[in-house]
Structure formats: structure tokens, C-alpha cells
Length: 119
Image 1 (spheres, rainbow, N blue to C red):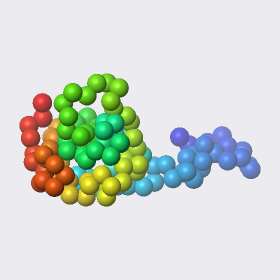
Image 2: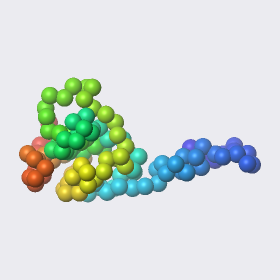
Image 3: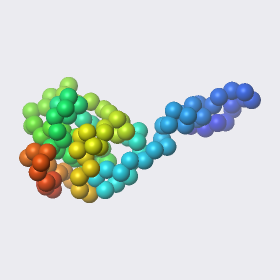
């Protein structure tokens, strides 16, 4: 995206994009910094208020937040911008550093995170 070809008095697509705050904020989660606009995969149970019990940092860099249930269907997942996940509300402040290709789980929101082998 660039300002090239924008005439005097016109608003460029880049200015609009920046003006909306896209791509300018960074969020630290699981020991890494990500753009606040990064899309994350979140199960609907978490969006409906269930605690995050499984966090995955996929090999390709995707972030997944899930309730821990293993019987999710394709329709149970949503793409959500990282900025829309309140770290306090979803109890994400205590996530340990999670490298790509790793998963952490916990039995309940009162338990510590445990690193497990990615399946």
C-alpha cells in the first residue's frame, strides 16, 4: 500500500489505513510481539466466556485460543484480531513464552500452564 498517484486534496488509502490505527500497534503475548491486527483462531466457547485452557503457536505463526475441548467442528472457530482479545478478561497475562510449533495447556484457569508436544 502506498501514497503514489494520490492527487492534492485527496486522502490516500494508506492515510485512511493508518488513521484507523491499523498496523501501528503491537501486543506482547506468549513472549512475542505481534501486530494488534494479527488474526487469531479462537473457539466460540472462549468468545462466549469460557476460559482459555489451550494456547497454540503454530509452525506457520498462527495463534489459537481454545477452551480445551477436543470435539470442535469447523464452525466452532472464528478469526479475531489480537487487539479484540482482552488479555485480562481472557486471563492471558500469565501465558509463558511459547515458540512456534508449541502448545501450552492447563486444566483450569487456576492451574499453571504446561508445555505439551504439538500433535
